[in-house]
Length: 209
Image (cartoon, rainbow, N blue to C red; front, side, top):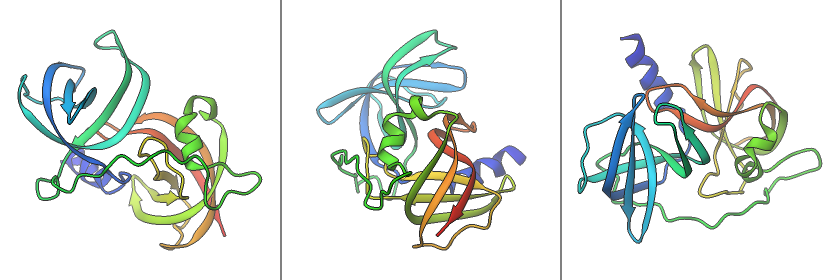
């Protein structure tokens, strides 16, 4: 029951999701995940989801959680040049597919000493385990999850459809719609389990106007 509750709570903190419907071309399962090569329109690429029964030719509906480059699966002992970690799509909204938005690296609020969200996603290896500051708009808050407050911030920038950055903090969450400075330690490839994976998340965060 504790694991189920944690899974449900984490679900409320996910960043904005792009939704897809694709055909499975091949699949393999290992370490609690199913890795699938899918055909999505004219594109073919790999995705990873929590382990599930799936076979070639199945139609799969899923939402984006985050793209990863040069990902190494230890349990498969295999490298993926580019792979999408995905979650289950809501059956009632899968027809409202989100189009790929061209990347925009500059923040609408960028100032000296701040970084754009797109820059952090695109160069997460460079900024991993360093303290970063973003100026942006609060788009969502979730309080008291794992004794932390979870704050989503957007700044108008976008990298490969990733434009929503999650900050965790013990500080009182700012109000929705506020423009704030958010500072914290960048952690890459954070996996909370149950399919909730963050290519980038900012922890031990503080906020100010």
